[in-house]
Image (cartoon, rainbow, N blue to C red; front, side, top):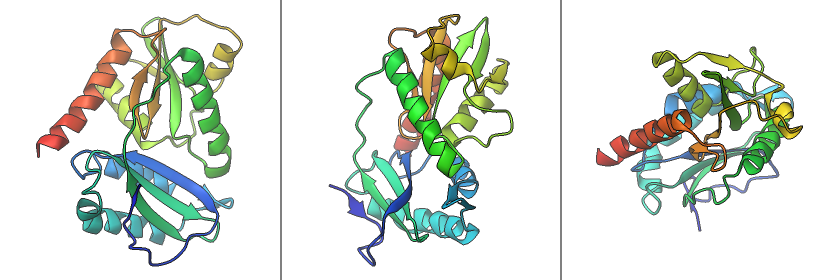
Length: 218
């Protein structure tokens, strides 16, 4: 079950974009990053109307606390249909069940197929190779809110970061010239691969969980 923050005011048409953002204590911890990424997304080949971004911000600030009472640590879903109408709803959070490298690669591939339509991938594959963080994006591409957080944290920690649009393809073709792999997701946060995990991925995963924990204490 979900709660409709729009109180059923209208019926949406065919979804063109669905953003899934993790909540903590009825708050959206990465709100500014998610909304910045939203402003760069596309629907029907056109940049999202900035009035919709303003609406999303106001809706989050005015109604999220009451509208997420059933699932305070759930997932906020922003749904935009092909006509540009939008609605928000909140549902439960369910941890990712399968975290093998092959599963993370597949999720990243699907996210980038979505990005071909919308401009931004909600999930990205990250690797650690010779002490350098690599993730599967082009240098000129706007990235998701969660990916921008990890990139900023890495710079703060003095860890070099590079974008490599061929990174996922290499893994799909069998390359294993890396020490660690993890997924960065707007919904799931940082998810280390269970078969290619390591200290750096765990550090980012722990940092993300601390961010959520701090929100839950407020």
